[in-house]
Length: 285
Ligand code: GUN
Image (cartoon, rainbow, N blue to C red; front, top):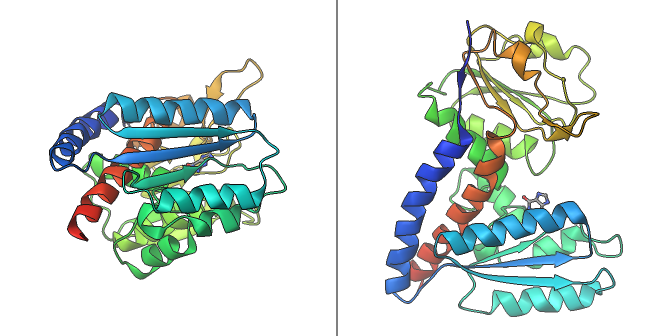
């Protein structure tokens, strides 16, 4: 068997078309969706991510504000900026790019963002909403993974889903989203002794480890849906996921490529959350 490819670029394009229309409708109601992106310091990878987020906003009719501060910005000044953006009616989403310089507590920063503008879905309130099955913002990467799984047409209900990774930003919310969709969920992590024992049971396998070639062919159930969240570089600098793509595609039923799978969906779901934040702000006034 050769797996069908789950095309994150095509799915992103489809979702973004719909978003552009929703943004236009909101603009005619005087509520053009607005995203504020804050970058502190000079991390080159963060600068690229942030630029792509701002560019995506501009391409789809969203208003964006980009604020860049040098690495010496105090935590108090950053919190003050966030409070000002919380009060700004033209801003519906606030994203503070991580990682932050060491003298700034990321938890305090995230908790200062108004939950109605927490389009990253990282705050404890947003996490609690997800945990409780309440409406709220879902973290963009696992939210995008759900859309990729749904796009295959495979019914998630009653399936065995295995998530590798337990981060607050991907693994844990991913497991909760799959559980909410009525999958039976196993979460594996760095202390799991026999990873393959679990992954071989998976009808749906999500790898969010950050180490290439973690998932090999003999660890995958024939026909499984395989979602690769990893973004790693090999010795030649080539992008590779956590899954040994060429090997695993021979047994899986569906698989995401790297690049072109999960990556484009993360920014797309940020736009989705921002448009939704603007729509909700219209309902609450
Ligand atoms: N750094 C890497 N990914 C992310 C993300 O999704 N959101 C934020 N705020 N920072 C990041």
